[in-house]
Image (cartoon, rainbow, N blue to C red):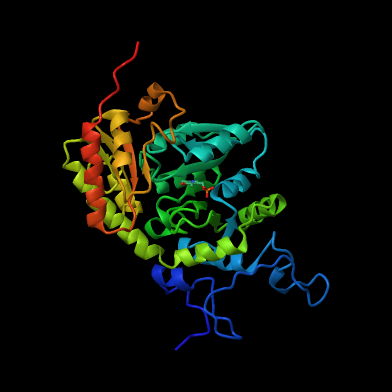
Length: 392
Ligand SMILES: *Cc1c(COP(=O)(O)O)cnc(C)c1O
C-alpha cells in the first residue's frame, strides 16, 4: 500500500531515508516526487502571514526544502541549506567572518576553496593558516584566540590524506569555534562528521550526492540553530540559493547514493589491489589499504573507503599523460602535475608529497572487468612513455 505519511526518521535506515526523507506523496494526487516548483513568489492568505514561511524563492522554495530535509536526514543533522554550488556554500560560510578573524584549514584543500580563501577573503582581512591536518598536532599548534573555524577535508584530494575528525572536533570545542568538515569525497553514506563531533558539514552535491554529472549544487548541514540563522542570512542576502530544477536532480540522485557508494568503494578496492601488484607502479594511495598511513583512522570513521584511488607511476609526468590518454572507460583520470596542480612549480609540488607520476582515478560504477581492462591499457601505455630529451 502507498503510505501517505512520511517515514519515521528515528528508526529508518540510511537507504530508506535516502529515498523518503524530506518528501511525502502529494495528498491531492499521490504523486511521489516533490515537483519542480518553478515559482518565485507565493500568495499569502493574509498579509504578512505566508504559508510555511514561503514568501519568495530566493529565501525558500518547496523543492529546495525537500532536498534540504533529505540531506539533513542523511547527515543526522537538524537542518540543511542548499546553495547554487559547493563554492557558494563555502562563500556563505565565510561571509560571517570579520577582519582579524582566523581560520585553520587543511593544506591540500580543493583548489577552488583555496582560491576563495586566499584571493577573496584574505583581501578582506581574514587570516588563514594552512596546515597538514592529517597530524592533529599541527591543528592544535595553529589554533589561536582569533580562530573562528577549523576547516578540514577528509579524505583529501588528490593525496587522499585522512584527518581524524573526532580529534579535530575536540580541539575546536576547546577553542570554542566550529569544526567544518567538507564531506564531499566520502559522502554521508561513508562518513558522518556530526556524529564524530563536527559542527558543520559541507558538500559539493555536484559530485557523489548528485551522481549523474547533470547538476551543480552545494549544501551545508548542522545542528546549531544560531549558525543556521547566520548562514541562511548571508545566503539570502547574496542570492546563493539552489534553483528548483537542480534541487530536484540532486534529490533524485540521493535515492541511489548508498548503492553507488558501495559499488564505487568495492571497485576502488579491487583496482587499488590490482595496482599494488604491478611493476609500472611505484606506490598506491588508497585509505582501504593497510599501507595507507591513515588506514586505522579511516577504518574508525568511514564505513567503506570511497571511490578515489591515487597512484604513482614510475615513468613520471609522461607516464601519467600516456596513462590518461590510453584509458577509454575512465572519464575522470586526473593527472595533477599537468592538470589541477600544473600552476604549482615542480619542486613545490614534490615537497607537498605530489610525485611527478601521480595519477588519481575516480572509480565509477561501470563493470569492474571493463575498469580493470582500462587500467591495464593505461599501464601498458605508461610503461612505454619516456621523458622527452632535455633541451639545452
Ligand atoms: C567540487 C568540490 C567543491 C566545490 O564544489 P562546486 O559544486 O564545484 O562549487 C568543494 N569541495 C570539494 C572537496 C570538491 O570536490
